[in-house]
Image (cartoon, rainbow, N blue to C red; front, side, top):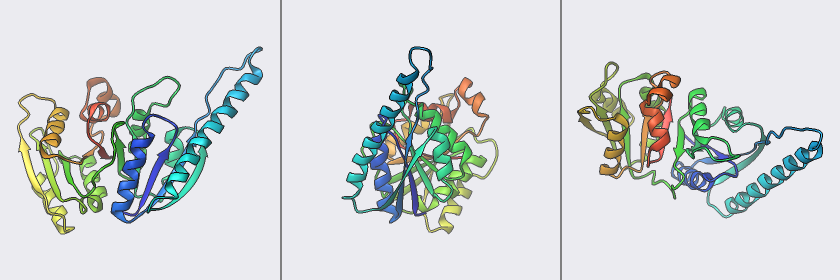
Amino acid sequence: MKNVLLLVHADPGQEARFQAALDLTRALGGHLTCVDVFVPQVIADNYYMGSGSAWAMAEGHDAERRHGAQYRERLATEDVAWDWVDATGGLGGRIEDEAGLADVIVTSREADRLFEPNLQRVTEDVVLRRNQPVVAVPGDCTGIDWHGRALVAWDGSDPAMAALRGTTPMLALAADVELFEVDDRLAGPSAEEAARYLSRHGVPSTIERVHSLHRATAGLIEDRADATGAAYVVMGAYGHNRVRERFLGGVTHQMVRGSRHPLVLAH
């Protein structure tokens, strides 16, 4: 794992994901690719606003490029290898287009805001459509200690296995790895089997298993991350149908919407 792809866009989550991506690139001794996406605002042309929409689009493009220039100036003083890609289109689509040779993708989890893309939904789309792990950063994140403690939410599902395989090089950096299993695992490998998988890659881990007692799994994961001082949480995304999770409040949906911790997601 060496190639880190970062979404660059003028939105409230930019600084948080910039810091997280820098920390990860340094920890991996890797290369950072910044994809600066300009999203044209769709403005309805009419008899009175024919030239106004063109002006607004040009102004928005200039603002995005000024925003990107500020981050390029900062990167020039950082101790990481990097390159820059300018792109136009939808955030999710352009990230997916550029992610072919990325090992990990860094995005945000900011909620809906007026005239801004829904970054929570963008993150969910990228997780479902790409094979790489996606680091989903909360808006108040000031950096991630990739050498700190990692919590792996384990349920034996295909997405959980994909997340464990995809993040093993990342977990190898951690001072401590805990596999956290809630008692609602119905099938698939146990946490002990997951621990043996990690051990074959030279990654020691411990196991914590709890009974839900009818508490929401997302809340149990959050509480455990708090209790262990986890720097981030690794978890499989959308073990159930995404639409079903959105309407019934599945674990992925709840974590992406409300977690206080950086998430590393895979499907």
